Image 1 (cartoon, rainbow, N blue to C red):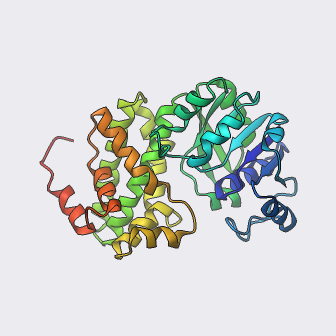
Image 2 (cartoon, rainbow, N blue to C red):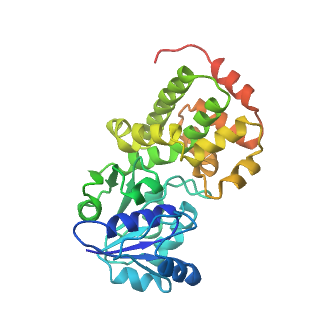
Length: 328
């Protein structure tokens, strides 16, 4: 299969490496926006900025230049840009014949739309979907065992993603519930900030378990209000992605919470990462979508208040614990 991955950040690069290492011998091209960056990666046979020390499979090629021309020659296109760049990429690809899937998670900042809603607005004719689930780029790039969800209403998108990536190190499960998969992928980043804060304040393992469990309930409530299936949130893109992002040491969103607990400002926390932490930008939109849908999300509300500087960490905890008792 001829596969093009658009975007040479950590996740786009990791997925290109995974596809190129596939036993089926796919023809994989990784596209970078910057020509100098592309030439450097092609020469070094690695992405030293985002995945240092991990060598590219021999068959992986890195290119810059006309992304649309590369996509027109592909049998599968993977968009590996952040959410902020998705709309522009979909506009570029709006009449592309190949199946298209994106890797980004979250809501578009200006509109509050999920990725599939952005696509429906600017390129509804595309056969498109989301590729999501509990996975850190470094581990996928190393070929460590992982599992992802190919979510789309189009069978040929799901089938193409399974054919491109399913193998000994990476299991790919198909789902038609793109709403549930994308809600899980967006909300888990916000909840990971809360869990990092909890751990940074040394509140204990009981508190962490309670926070993750109640966070899953918030995620599910929002998803159901937006049209998702309840079982999706007990799967890879719900519980699985939440547990990974909330507890894994490679999680940037968890790291933001840990740094805030140390007394760092939000700007200091973000600057220290060197990468995007989507939960910082998704928190406001998650809360806005929840309010519009009439859904209670007290943990997400506290995270947003904390990020906005309206609450300090101990006060956020006190606010959550002071809520009235209720049935689970």
